[in-house]
Image 1: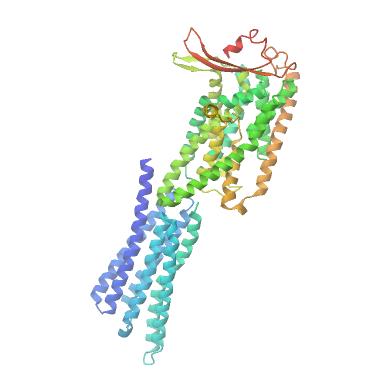
Image 2 (image 1 turned 135 degrees about the vertical axis):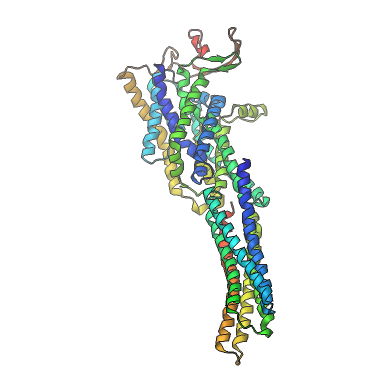
Length: 215
Length: 399
């Protein structure tokens, strides 16, 4: 009996730890973007290496959780949903890390007057991922709160899209910028936007999974 | 040699174990919430406990319907009940062992000219209808309770999984106990009046009556059925009527077990009488019918459109066909056993003047102390047309 509850508790802790990694990844991303926009590249690279390490740890943790859920035949009727949620949330963390890697590799030439807007864009995208994590935690513990958090994810995603559109309109309305530069900046805005989109896609899955959990 | 006659009862027990354990642990094992070995072990232990400790109540009721008093008769009744169950299962018709046994006993009554207590028969048939309804009500009540308390408990999904696993085993144990207590009458009830076992006293402290020995053997055969064949039933019996999650399975099994328990518990009967309420009859009810009632109860409030009413209709048809087929088969088989194999299917020395009167007399012999082993015997002897026969047959007091 103690072994049974201990086994469950251990995986519960690992799931929480995995979700913590996603939140931590979002915070590092925001810091990284801020440093990049302020040309503090050394600190940016430091954040980048931290987030890469974090992503790897999250991957290992996810695989470990998935293996345990299957080998120990835990939560049989919800296992598919939980694995789907963990994989999709891992994909959100990957998107966060990949975007920061792209900043480091491609070194986009940012426009200083649009820095605030770009940071605002990153902040909203990460907000969506944070609410996504909250809603996943609620899925495990408190089903009644899932819906509220999913609503917040939708709102943050819409806000991200709105800011991204504004940013893109602004850069494409500047006649003195090269088209290649405009497209490059648009690509980065799109990449940040994808974080929020992925978070929203996961929440659509989550909404269905939540209905299945009601007895 | 008398032992050989018990084989048909043991076959019936094996069949009951193979089929009815699936009602208790089917979803739990099918969904891999509980390992089969655990389920089989818990089922076997608790079926034996239920049968030996509380199996007497329902057996008395079957005895009142028809006291099969010759071993060859008991053998035929049990064999035909078991065969009719097997044939109907082969034809993929849902079947209840309880109904097959009642049908077979009625077949014996008609063949031997023994009186049928129609009031008892109405009581038994009434429970066939009442038990699924009661199970449905229990299931609905338990469902609302679970929804209210589990919804607000904010327990982590994984912790809930652990609790559900423990719950399924505990409720399964209760279900197995109730099954043993309620359904042992189906397996060994027809042998009670022709029991080949003598009463035993273990070191003068513990009395083990012939009936309890009979129930022990019957319940072991149920256990063998659980271990040898129920895994196949558990994994192939799907959620035909309504898809059950492990928590719903827990609710449904608990509701079913409560029904089997209330129709088997002599303690509950005494309690109801002591507080001035009418007691529920102690009748072997079908665990399959009870579980179907519980599933439909939950399905009706959860999502009505997902109920497969075609299957429900098929099941209801089986309820009518089973006793009729078992009765006819038993009647025909008794004819052959008596006239072709020349076996005594009714002991008329115990039941003289069967056809003269149908009055059933109940005698309770409490606290009959024997000077040899200083033990206390509690017996209820049901005799048809008792008057004038008890003194002529003193062996009845010993059995």
